[in-house]
Amino acid sequence: MNRKTRVGILSAIFAAAAIAGCVSPDSAYVEADRATFEAVAPYVLDRLGKDEELSKEQRRQRRATISSWEYRLDEALNKRNWVGRIGDSQ
Image 1 (cartoon, rainbow, N blue to C red):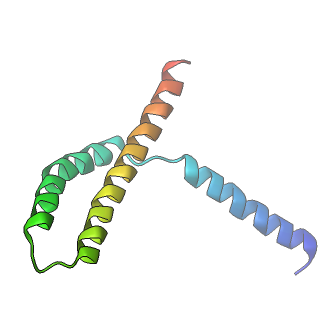
Image 2 (cartoon, rainbow, N blue to C red):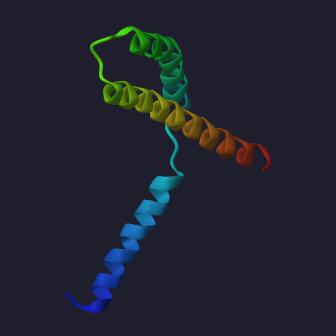
């Protein structure tokens, strides 16, 4: 493979990655996932404190999972709102 071909392939990969980074999930999906989070997360967090069979590490991992889920939802909502604001200003 020559240098020009490698550069072309890498350029295509970087372009695809840039485009993928600009795509946000469908708003209906994000809103449904947020509703699921609001219903499930409090229950899970409450159960973590009551389940004596879980180790400290298992509790930490489950709390981190809930925290990560919330972070991804917030990021998706922020990206969607940002894209919406751009569209509104035109």
